Image (cartoon, rainbow, N blue to C red; front, side):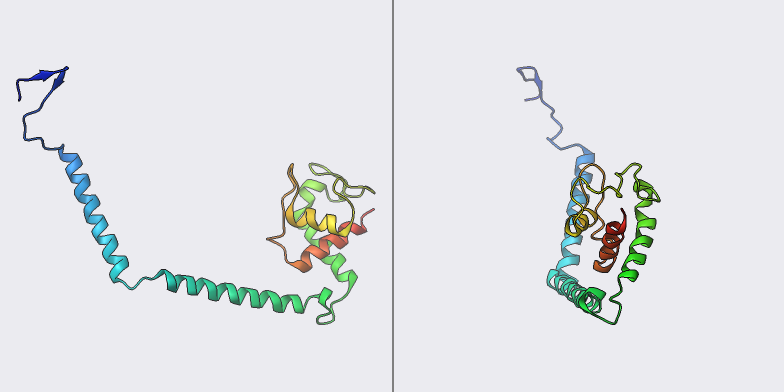
Amino acid sequence: MADHDFDGIKYRDDGNRSPLIFRILYGCLALWGVLFMGYYLLSGWSSEKEFAEKQKVATAGAAAFESKEQNSPSKGGEGKNDPAAYLASGKKIFSERCVACHGADARGGIGPDLTKAELKYGRSEAAILESVSSGRPGGMPGFGKELGHEQLEGVVTYLLSLK
């Protein structure tokens, strides 16, 4: 068969062995597969255990969130139901997170002027809360995952006080 040349194809007569690099790579892959299966099958690892741990953490987080909500000023918690406290908290958060875009006096910069009587998405408490928590297209990031409910209410209270 070594002397035949069909359609320009040359045949090797070295025992039809694959190149050495392919045999080495195949051997390494097979060894890795055996080790991988041995570790996960024989080590006692279980995705059920991992799921149970994640479920426990999520349940603890939800319980902590519920207790925080019960103690919040809006729920009539531990005597913090003070609009001035919300206003001060909102002003502080605004100065930490919003000044870069809206300016120190909230009259705009990169972001729009927040002291206007009418805002693009509305000046109601619900519209401002939606803007702050979820963000808006065109550059307004959402802070709902970074700020708690009380903090968001504080920012909304502060923004509603601007006029």
